[in-house]
Length: 228
Image (cartoon, rainbow, N blue to C red; front, side, top):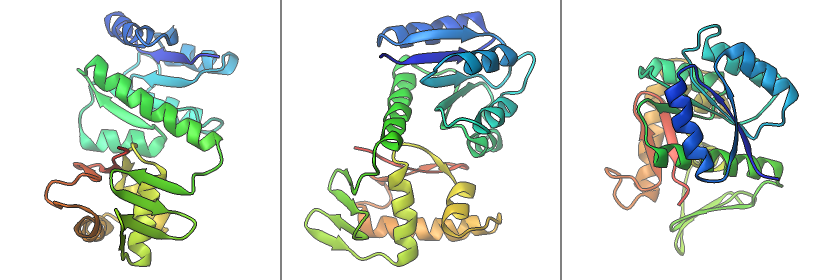
């Protein structure tokens, strides 16, 4: 059975643009111009992923994300004209899987869609024992990280951070999410500690830490581990 997407967008022209992009990949679509209509669709249809605008006429997109996350782990990609870092962080922390700022290209949208669908398929399968991207390998069951034939010596906390990124490869993880998952708490002051950890990990796994190949920074938001 093919994928069915829900497009939640009050701008008819943008809805048409997104629909064109999805249909170019043979994906089926349902459209909703309001938040309440979107929530109704989600109650009655089996949706593969949601593409959600935040600025809807009836409900704020953040509240829709929170409502959906109460009962579902369905992938949600936010597409919004809101471009402030704190708004992106709020959407991601509420449970969105990714965030695209308008305007965006068809290629960018389709790339993000491939990531969330791949991530969803991995969740439904048994967890992989090895992560592999370029020369980087992470053996989750053995807690071993290697670059080519060389073992990379990480501290236990550095390994926890890297393995968390690897288990969500391709997805941006906010500072808040990483700190909560690894340290169990979150303070604004802890963000600087996280930067130090990332710098240390990059020195150990990146050929050129100043131009990282694996750990990518989403400025003001968090980090993303490259999948390929």
